[in-house]
Length: 100
Figure (cartoon, rainbow, N blue to C red):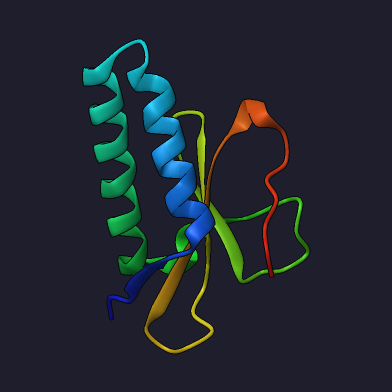
C-alpha cells in the first residue's frame, strides 16, 4: 500500500535553500537536483521501510534515503498511511537537526 507523503516545514525550507544555493551558479542544475529529490521522495511511500535508520537517532522509525550527497530523512507512519519528509540535508553539513 502506498502512503501519503507529508512534508515538514523544515524539509520544505531545506529543498528551497538547496535549490537556491545551486541556482546561484547553475539554474539548470538546481532544477534537475530539485526534480530528482522530489522523484526520490515520491518513491518512498512504495517501500517506506527500505531506507536506512538514521545513525544520529536511536529511533527505528526515522529513516533516510540518499540522492547523491543529500540525505532525505523521513519518519515512518505514526498515522497509518502517512510518511513525513523531515529534512533534506547535505552530508557535508554534519548531522541534521531533527525535531521529534
